Image 1 (cartoon, rainbow, N blue to C red):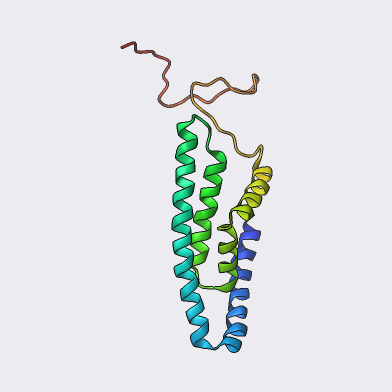
Image 2 (cartoon, one colour):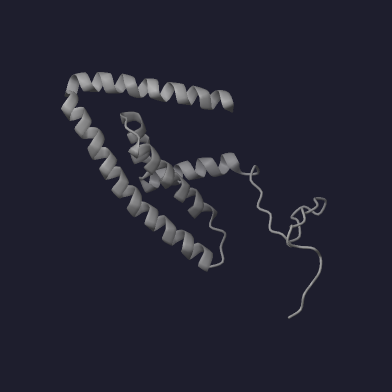
Length: 149
């Protein structure tokens, strides 16, 4: 995992630099800088509106008593989109704008859901374990005493 992240942190800036130099030569410095500023402003506005919508969906799911897993994952992807959109670069802007498109975000969420399935376990103190042979960790708040009020 560390190797993949290291590779990502090396390759993305190199690719961005290449794109800056290539497109900057074609478009000119002023146009390149204008595009970077415009995409950052547009990306921030889109992220804000999509983030609000995602928050409403999250709150609606919790109000209905559902586990808001899908809504939380979409919210995280919108947050990631906002972060890469304010990062100067053509490659990161492309990824950010793609994550703000709901069908693309749904496809990515489906892929991540399949990839993470079984790797994430939700544990609620006091609830019986799903697997009877598995022992539920004790909550620090649960000392076994019941106080009836």
